Length: 182
Image (tube, rainbow, N blue to C red; front, side, top):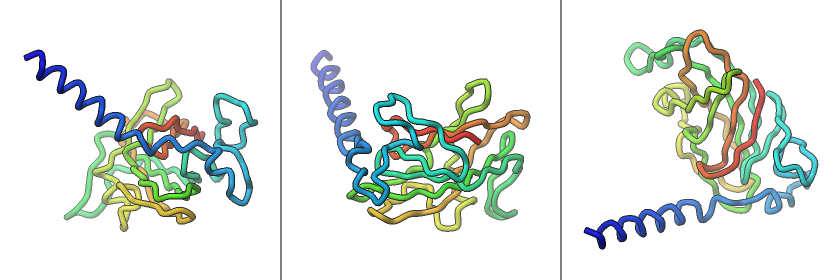
């Protein structure tokens, strides 16, 4: 019994280390782009916390530069009568452009993105509904090569009486993320 427990713990540790091995690309790796800017949305060098970006402003996390194009809440259903999804509360559809500013392909995963209400309540993305909101599935496990960009819709299912105030966008599930106010 003890050998099995030890083996399970070691296997879990190896898997966890392997999953995060290539996902810690810092801004210093991406500072060779045309602007030579830092990893955040305009924060000064040496800041521990990046400056929060606004809709329409680029914001960086790891190998990705995110630009939130728009946000629309109050949507009850996505898709059509045959294929679609109905919100438990209301859908908020966030259109975001994702550009790979790194030197190797990076997978964009819509499920790594988070949304927050004013009270600090965290909401996860609804990847099932995102399938119906995106014609080409740009926000579901999509590899983006260096220099390329995709635009897609990240979907959040939130209560009807809630208003989102910010997004936390991530280049991977293990990254620190960057904030964008809505």
